[in-house]
Image 1 (cartoon, rainbow over the protein chains, first blue to last red):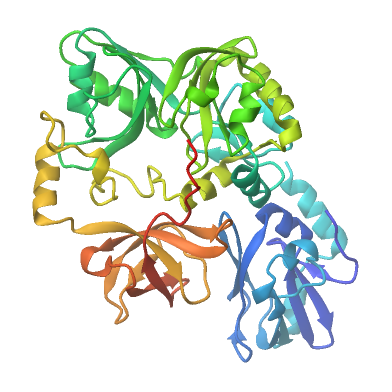
Image 2 (image 1 turned 60 degrees about the vertical axis):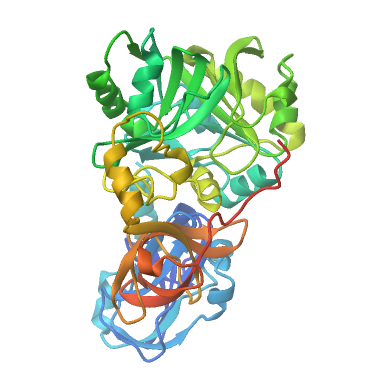
Length: 128
Length: 365
């Protein structure tokens, strides 16, 4: 499974890419592979105020719907609308395609996230 | 988890194994969309060895079956397969099954995997006179070869004249790749194709021979995921979703498999009453008008928030490329053209009631 060094991860197989006080959130290569072909993406609305653990959106494969939870609190400042018409790009480029960008309200929450090495170790454990 | 004789073959072919009602079976190999497409345009091979096979024989076999199932078996001939619900006295469904007439008093019943033990007990408790039931599910493998190229592929392995087997007919003892096989022109995909029943100890052999024979036609192994999207588009009901103990075959739209005029059968009084009064609910198709994928158990409401029913199956339909559902709706709402809301993650998303099926192939057999 591919990972990227420039970002942080969650045990729900999401990635977080920090840019100052803002963060883009997406799903990992591991997540897209276990979902299979993504056929539908639901995104939050710009302006939504979310607490860590709230539903950020949903990613649906042929087989099932999976909700995506935000690992960080903040306000949605942008969403990747291109996914609504091309949900399959989440399979093709999981680390280029983000779901939403948040203006973070609590930087301390970043401490809960995994770095690349810790995430790789976590994924290796999931295989067994 | 229980394994079919092909478990190792699934791993070898890259199958992603899931727990399907206690059975370890592949949900997909390369991908549901690819396998779905292969079956619609070329051919796919499914391991359905988890299905139950019950044999019933003895002088009172037909009389017993006529009481047990809702369809009329009296007009069937040797070599004919009949689909039928099997009901309780309430009219609710115990299971839906295929009944193969080997001889007037000798039938093979193919039942849903998860219902095999329940069905065996249900039938056994109700047998009268001389009829012997034998559960040979463990010794019987089943493969489904489905798709427009199915006949051409299978013909490479057998001298039998496959083009003479019409839809819902079968040959009980055909040699396929030196293996004795019951070859049935049936399936659960909405495409032409065959279901093959044969001894479980020959399963890996036939699996390999079929894949090899079909390679030039683009035959691929196909998993439960594609089986579900294929049957969904063809609006073939699935026990546990469209069918169940609280759903009557009339509500499920299986009217043509319920013969109220034949001699008495279990559930007839309840079904007759339902037919006379009108069914309270009806299975319909839903096409999403708003953005969203309808899924099993999502509530359906009418436009003012009133309960209208429930989604029984829903998905992105790969061939028709739409988000669609089958739903059981209260009769006033079950009219094609009617607008309703599917409640997706708490939000109402508009959908239109449409006729079933979503997909039908051009019939050539």
